[in-house]
Image (cartoon, rainbow, N blue to C red; front, side, top):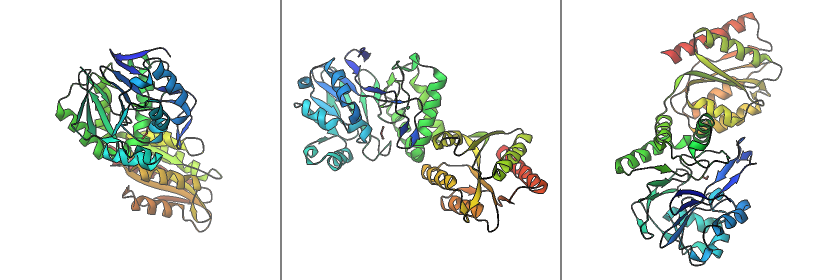
Length: 395
Ligand code: FEO
């Protein structure tokens, strides 16, 4: 491994997962990384581990920097298995190391890996661990991403290690923001926030505000996925503040699927109506686009229109999958509209509206429906529906 030093005595020892394309359903077309860091002073601390399939690589990377018997502490910022599933092996090798986690982290470690982790020591917000000249300070961050999550701050080096927060699923040869394409980096950071952290927006706003109020200098943010922010860490902090505040722009996302082309025709007529009012529109046909891509487009949109044909009196299955995913992510402050086609009984638009209402979404009614194949009158209704939504978005 080419040595990656963040500061004197602070090294990246993680792994790059170049080939992962599906991270529990989230399409990671640019791969990912599982970052672990080794902090060396009079005492040595390993911050997080990696996914179990990369245990050998982690062992190799640590061995190139220190020997396992010199590791005094293993800090577990988060127990999700992409960061902890190599811990059982690493803990056996680092036999002198104490393991530190939040109280919820300790419980989760026992629940994942058994009673051998029942002697893990717990830390809470404000606790500090002196390694010599270097100090680790802990800050609990529940639900960023799980109840157990916490941040570790390297006081003298001014490095925040927030685990999942501020990450990106991005495999690159460079480890720092100034070594990668800025546009790609922000695209992946946006997708990561939308697909993983969006449901926790109010907690994110509060946690970032708490960090700002602590007035701790942050020279680097070293998350557990993707690159390390050192050029301008405030860029990603400000992006998170905007996203978690639900900031949006004049944009409509139109998500649909189609059986014989009728809902497709309706989608295009609706989009024309939106464009006629000079509002940006993005069209995504499910089965041609990934859910994670659709969610990313929705993050900053003011309105979302969802179209489905009727199949056996229900919405089309891909729309069911989409609505399950998007309602779980709890996007806030958007206007939702529904449209679709049917042959005899109908049911897709009704079903989608019921799902959206149950999720607490603001629904624009009525939706638009067309029987079999949309005729001129139906297409006019679709165009006008698009115009009405665009006017709402511009208001
Ligand atoms: Fe990267 Fe919540 O684990």
